[in-house]
Image (cartoon, rainbow, N blue to C red; front, side):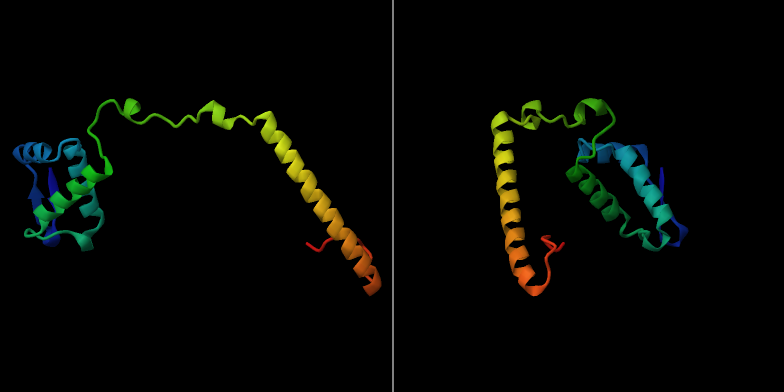
Length: 134
Protein backbone atom coordinates (compact mmCIF):
# COMPACT_ATOMS: atom_id res chain seq x y z
CA UNK A 1 0.00 0.00 0.00
CA UNK A 2 1.35 3.44 -0.92
CA UNK A 3 0.58 6.94 0.35
CA UNK A 4 1.26 9.91 -1.95
CA UNK A 5 3.54 12.60 -0.53
CA UNK A 6 4.53 16.10 -1.62
CA UNK A 7 6.43 16.25 -4.86
CA UNK A 8 4.86 13.04 -6.16
CA UNK A 9 6.93 10.73 -3.95
CA UNK A 10 5.24 7.72 -2.41
CA UNK A 11 5.57 6.21 1.04
CA UNK A 12 5.13 2.46 0.98
CA UNK A 13 3.53 0.73 3.95
CA UNK A 14 4.90 -2.80 3.97
CA UNK A 15 3.26 -5.85 5.57
CA UNK A 16 5.83 -5.58 8.37
CA UNK A 17 4.79 -1.93 8.92
CA UNK A 18 1.12 -2.96 8.98
CA UNK A 19 1.79 -5.66 11.56
CA UNK A 20 3.78 -3.25 13.75
CA UNK A 21 1.05 -0.59 13.50
CA UNK A 22 -1.68 -3.14 14.29
CA UNK A 23 0.22 -4.15 17.44
CA UNK A 24 0.65 -0.49 18.39
CA UNK A 25 -3.01 0.36 17.81
CA UNK A 26 -5.12 -2.58 19.00
CA UNK A 27 -8.80 -2.23 18.23
CA UNK A 28 -8.15 -0.17 15.07
CA UNK A 29 -8.57 -1.59 11.58
CA UNK A 30 -5.11 -0.38 10.49
CA UNK A 31 -5.47 -1.63 6.89
CA UNK A 32 -8.73 0.28 6.42
CA UNK A 33 -7.29 3.40 8.05
CA UNK A 34 -4.20 3.24 5.80
CA UNK A 35 -6.48 3.03 2.76
CA UNK A 36 -8.36 6.06 4.11
CA UNK A 37 -5.04 7.93 4.57
CA UNK A 38 -4.02 7.13 1.00
CA UNK A 39 -7.38 8.31 -0.33
CA UNK A 40 -7.17 11.51 1.74
CA UNK A 41 -3.67 12.30 0.45
CA UNK A 42 -4.79 11.67 -3.12
CA UNK A 43 -7.81 13.98 -2.69
CA UNK A 44 -5.83 16.73 -0.90
CA UNK A 45 -2.66 17.31 -2.95
CA UNK A 46 -1.90 20.62 -1.25
CA UNK A 47 -1.91 19.00 2.17
CA UNK A 48 0.21 15.95 1.41
CA UNK A 49 3.01 15.18 3.81
CA UNK A 50 6.76 15.33 3.33
CA UNK A 51 9.02 12.30 3.78
CA UNK A 52 10.03 13.81 7.12
CA UNK A 53 6.43 14.21 8.35
CA UNK A 54 4.73 11.10 6.94
CA UNK A 55 5.38 8.92 10.01
CA UNK A 56 3.91 11.53 12.35
CA UNK A 57 0.89 11.84 10.02
CA UNK A 58 0.30 8.06 10.12
CA UNK A 59 0.72 7.91 13.90
CA UNK A 60 -1.63 10.87 14.50
CA UNK A 61 -4.25 9.47 12.14
CA UNK A 62 -4.25 6.08 13.84
CA UNK A 63 -4.34 7.65 17.30
CA UNK A 64 -7.43 9.66 16.34
CA UNK A 65 -9.02 6.50 14.91
CA UNK A 66 -8.34 4.69 18.17
CA UNK A 67 -9.78 7.51 20.27
CA UNK A 68 -12.88 7.84 18.09
CA UNK A 69 -13.62 4.14 18.35
CA UNK A 70 -12.70 2.87 14.90
CA UNK A 71 -13.06 -0.90 15.15
CA UNK A 72 -11.61 -3.77 13.16
CA UNK A 73 -13.91 -5.67 10.83
CA UNK A 74 -16.04 -8.17 12.64
CA UNK A 75 -19.47 -8.35 14.18
CA UNK A 76 -20.51 -4.77 13.41
CA UNK A 77 -24.20 -5.43 14.07
CA UNK A 78 -23.56 -6.61 17.62
CA UNK A 79 -21.39 -3.61 18.42
CA UNK A 80 -23.82 -1.07 16.93
CA UNK A 81 -27.35 -1.90 17.97
CA UNK A 82 -30.04 0.63 17.09
CA UNK A 83 -31.47 2.63 19.98
CA UNK A 84 -34.81 1.32 21.19
CA UNK A 85 -36.40 3.49 23.86
CA UNK A 86 -38.02 1.83 26.84
CA UNK A 87 -41.74 1.59 26.11
CA UNK A 88 -42.62 2.68 29.65
CA UNK A 89 -40.92 6.02 29.00
CA UNK A 90 -43.10 6.60 25.93
CA UNK A 91 -46.45 5.92 27.62
CA UNK A 92 -48.52 8.79 28.99
CA UNK A 93 -50.17 7.99 32.28
CA UNK A 94 -53.76 8.95 33.11
CA UNK A 95 -52.41 11.36 35.74
CA UNK A 96 -50.19 13.09 33.13
CA UNK A 97 -53.17 13.42 30.79
CA UNK A 98 -55.33 14.89 33.57
CA UNK A 99 -52.62 17.40 34.52
CA UNK A 100 -52.19 18.36 30.87
CA UNK A 101 -55.93 18.95 30.50
CA UNK A 102 -55.98 21.10 33.66
CA UNK A 103 -53.07 23.16 32.42
CA UNK A 104 -54.74 23.62 29.03
CA UNK A 105 -58.00 24.72 30.72
CA UNK A 106 -56.07 27.26 32.84
CA UNK A 107 -54.33 28.66 29.78
CA UNK A 108 -57.61 28.96 27.88
CA UNK A 109 -59.20 30.77 30.84
CA UNK A 110 -56.25 33.19 30.97
CA UNK A 111 -56.56 33.90 27.24
CA UNK A 112 -60.31 34.45 27.50
CA UNK A 113 -59.85 36.77 30.49
CA UNK A 114 -57.18 38.69 28.64
CA UNK A 115 -59.31 38.94 25.49
CA UNK A 116 -62.24 40.14 27.58
CA UNK A 117 -60.07 42.81 29.17
CA UNK A 118 -58.73 43.88 25.78
CA UNK A 119 -62.24 43.97 24.35
CA UNK A 120 -63.38 46.34 27.07
CA UNK A 121 -60.36 48.63 26.72
CA UNK A 122 -60.40 48.33 22.94
CA UNK A 123 -64.09 49.26 22.86
CA UNK A 124 -63.23 52.54 24.50
CA UNK A 125 -60.50 53.09 21.90
CA UNK A 126 -62.62 52.03 18.95
CA UNK A 127 -61.30 48.46 18.57
CA UNK A 128 -63.91 45.88 19.42
CA UNK A 129 -62.87 42.68 17.61
CA UNK A 130 -62.16 40.84 20.90
CA UNK A 131 -59.10 39.05 19.56
CA UNK A 132 -55.51 39.05 20.74
CA UNK A 133 -53.07 40.33 18.15
CA UNK A 134 -50.81 37.61 16.79
